[in-house]
Image (cartoon, rainbow, N blue to C red; front, side):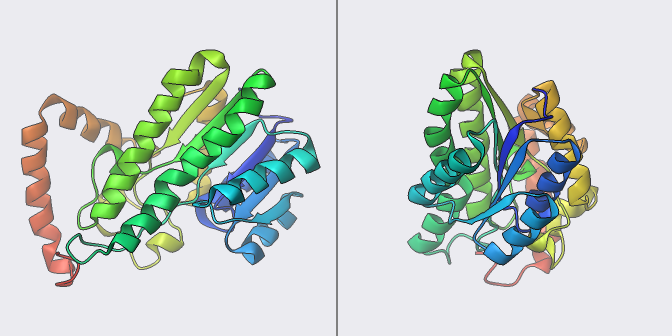
Amino acid sequence: MEIKNKRVVVTGAASGIGRALCEEFFASEVQSIVCVDMNIEGAEETAKNVNGIAIRADVSEEKDIINVIKKANEFYGGIDIFCSNAGIGGKPGLLNLEPSDWEKIWGVNVMSHIHAAKNVLPQMIEQGGGYLMNTSSAAGLLTQLGAAGYAVTKSAAVSFAEWIKITYGDKGIGVSCLCPQAVRTAMTADGPGVAGVDGMMEADVVAVEVLKAIEEEKFLVTPHIEVLEYVKRKGNDRDRWISGMQRLQKQYEDWLTPMDKK
């Protein structure tokens, strides 16, 4: 898809990858940018920098996503590219997690993508095409040591993006799924953890990769190229891969608190 002159929505736009995406879209001369975030002050700052508008939304709530789409239509006459980028790390561990912890991370990391697709796809199909960019993580292709909620929800996000591409790809809908390892954002402010084994990447570098993938209509966006090799190893011999991850888990257990190990 050609990006120039397109109408764009980005969630999680107050900082990190979301803000970098907005800035890269602006540099690519899109027609409009809607900056969405729970942090409305941060979203407004981003919007000011890219001549866009800011909308406060809890992306886990379908009504909020419906409102974002409504406002984007009112202000700019439609949506060509919807970047469902917002996500959270959630609590580490498993045995210490409450149902409310699962509901929260599932709502933001999975249901946000579902709400966006369900409510924006009809108008994209009617207008003859559109593009969805869903942010997942390398954890969605591999796993996340020490954090069951993150591993499970990011895996579900990848699966959902694949399903959308399979189901609607021949109806003019492009789909890309972003799966980086450690990126310098608020989520990694306390350190990259195990995800940083291949280095911390800057958000603006990730944003460039995303826009390139949209232009090329490439599904999987893996800014850390090592991830593709890990995925290949996992697919070739799942038992061997799990054994290797178990060894890696032991190496990192000294970094974890007793609560994290649950």
